[in-house]
Image (cartoon, rainbow, N blue to C red):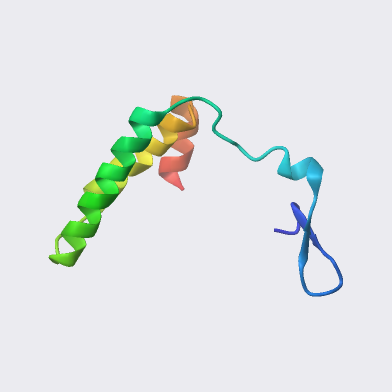
Length: 82
């Protein structure tokens, strides 16, 4: 956090503009992918309320989010290993 924000001296953080500009912001229309994420989240909520495992669904969401951010396969592999 110290690289993207500095303390204001008042116990709050002041965002450093040069670093904030580097945040990945989705600018393309990914309505279909976002709707798939919403479906998966709804399914996870239902499964958790019945004590079912959700690992596979969570992994599907991870893949969808990486697709939304248009990560390359190399970038996806880095994320998967972390």
